[in-house]
Image (cartoon, rainbow, N blue to C red; front, side, top):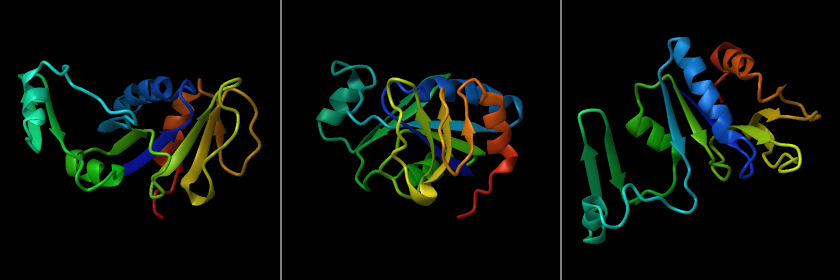
Length: 164
């Protein structure tokens, strides 16, 4: 399984890029999962829904199941580990794309930059494996334009060594 994080400031284009990459990778026969980092928390369904009431009552986890979907909400007792989450919940995925995760030093990162919003690279060292920007960025890793999502998928699929 390949795990890669897309990091960048709010509004830099991370979601837009991932939304383009998912169908492109799926067309290539890959199983793709996405983990979204929600720094400010999240709520599935609102505080008046049964799932929220169960959690408020002290449940350690709640599962939601329908004919089309399933969701599991668990208290994050182990701390924030995108790699552990990917392996626990998406073990059959060929690739897991993480939106966010800048502070997780174990993740390999593609930094997403946007002119006028986020123009400086914040990732460093071996974590940074590529940059996606709508302007010229001098750096030692591959640089792609956001419209080059097919080229990014090519690179992710075969041109990148995933061993650390």
